[in-house]
Length: 231
Image (cartoon, rainbow, N blue to C red; front, side, top):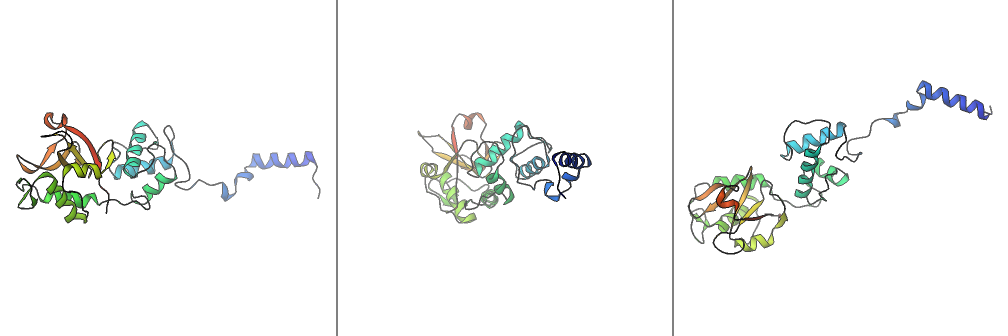
């Protein structure tokens, strides 16, 4: 049967009205990760991404389907931690990182949970200038011991060299190292960031202890944060 122009138009109109053209399975919802997400969008993928970000400690508050400014900031923090372009847009690389437990393929990170657990287990150890063992630590000896014993990572012996070897981060995340200028110009003290402004360190006055980065003493001496990669 040969269709004329008018007959074809009538047939298409009938299909559109009846919804027949939308019955194909190929017209279903996109799979998670197929849609680039950015501020202002509202959908189920946004809710899933926000749930993962909250589970990983990057997002606070209630999880919803709306991609607001707080979501963008959380995405940027996640991207920065995982060496991605920190543009606040959830594209293929960010989806991959979120879907692989927060580690980008090919990236090498230390297990921060192990580092922090080991660091806290040494609470109360006395301070000792030049100390590198649990009988007494100085600040860099403490960091060196913690990283070696917890995750097998060798870091430099001095604070200055640790600072030079670490990866720059604009804002510290849990497990990053925070550095301070104390008795001399440049980095001379460091500790492991625990979140909420707290860090654990070998203090010359208190031994291994938890300090507040935002206290008047440490705040004015803070010079930056670094991230340590696995060997």
